[in-house]
Image (cartoon, rainbow, N blue to C red):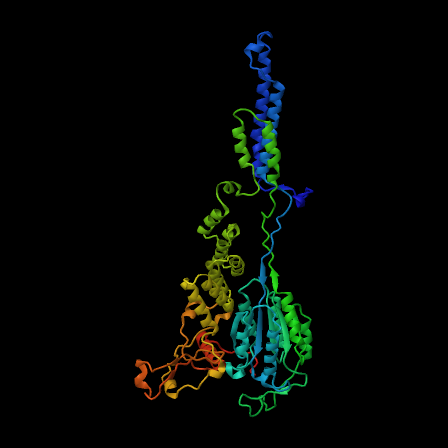
Length: 571
């Protein structure tokens, strides 16, 4: 109540002014009552004074007038309360969201120049590793781009997954040569669209010229996202080696192409809002500044929508004085009607009558049955039900916060589903494991954990020292996967169909793994192997992650019919 007063008469108005029309019949009733009292007094004078005590019931005419006046005031307060007086807006807290970080790594041929030792690309990889060590605490996605742009790692907080994919990145992994920054920025925008919070794009690239300046400027002007740029070249520049490594790239006239840092363009970029151009350093102080900036803006508070009815209804303030007046108005047979008026004049919200009959959870369930899950989530008091409503409404961040408050096995399982929909597979796996520990009989929790391990490549890990070379005969019998796996995603979460796909011989392993040792040869493969072998090792093929990425990118180019832009740089 402290912030309601004093009354701001400039903002004072009624939320439901139609109820003020009730004063017309109320005034008529008051006038009729007063007139009837005066008529009653006039005919009483016709009776002899000594007979009046025996003919007329005792009463006080002045008290009757006061009763009528008190009743009028009480019902007037009820009408004003129904009209909803207000002069203060509701302060709706904004939703808190976590900002994402997308790293755009240039994998064009010019990144193999050696003005930065050992190469520009290797130096960029070092900077990504240093950034991960700084622990920016945000969800990070890694995108590689050359003639086309592709997601290498979707948004995740498991930084080890990103680290395991960095070493194998090189220009020949990309299906089309060139440097298409426009496609990379568009893909980054798609990845960050999973949340309403503005994200940060970390661009590690060379040859930032006038075309790239226009692309970055349009990107920040058309969104609330920010760009952190680390230029990966020097003012002295360097020649660009060809892919075979034997020679350098030349133009149509036979002149050697050089990649040089453009200081003027970088200065123009640094003058733009939402763009920061960093200075490359020998230590990790450059990425430390970027990490601190990401941490500082990690939590984003969304502004609530400005609605016309976001005003505080002060009608409930009239309930207490109206109740006191009704107590003074006590008269046999009339208190029942006063209670009815009191019920309908309690106007702290439009659903006050429902609150008298239904619990909040029951009201929320009725909203959920109608499909209004967002409104239902606001009404639910039980964290598990509130989280389920947020989950069905697609607000996975809010669902995660509610499921964390539930300590049951179902709460942990639902938390895993919310993490999965939000793209955080490692956290989802941890939640499924917690649900399995709380209720070992929950088969769906075990299945969810296995699927998350399958997605993150965390199955059957062993010490690399135990790895052995595969038997040539067994390699010959290894089943080759003819159907490439589509994990493009575009920043979106992996679908259930993707989770069900079987990883065959091309399965990416970020560590060296092997199966258990068998004491004897199985019957179904005895005929295909030498019977002198007393033991058989069942292994997975140890593929280089870069080979898998190369196949995946080629498949995406064919599937989506991607073609290089004619105006993009060819090297």
